[in-house]
Image (cartoon, one colour):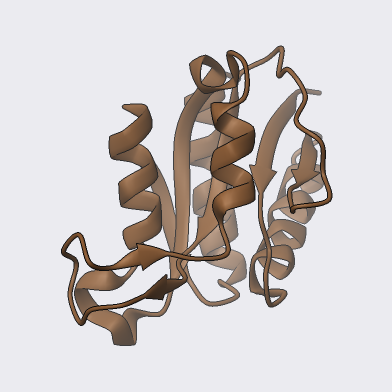
Length: 146
């Protein structure tokens, strides 16, 4: 049995719903997720093992993908990753969003990946499907090592 570390932020419950799908897939494969749901009420701590981050897309301003588009609501996750040496343990980012927003789909995850120099290892729309959870859990295992 392996344990995989996942940090995430859930604003409207979509991300939490998908994380539960991921946890169910992990359990079905005899593995588990070590989960940390972040928010403004969580004090930063020093991570000691590699992890992936799951980030939803919430944007404000502009109509495209330029610098005038600002991420909102996910600052607690970025602050946690920026704390101490946590960023050195980040191995990949999973993004969620709404495909109706075209170029802005998973834009926050793409920006995290660029900022922290890690790959986007998966994406899903809204609450995601069980199939997407299976595929993304496989990517988590590849990224964090089996």
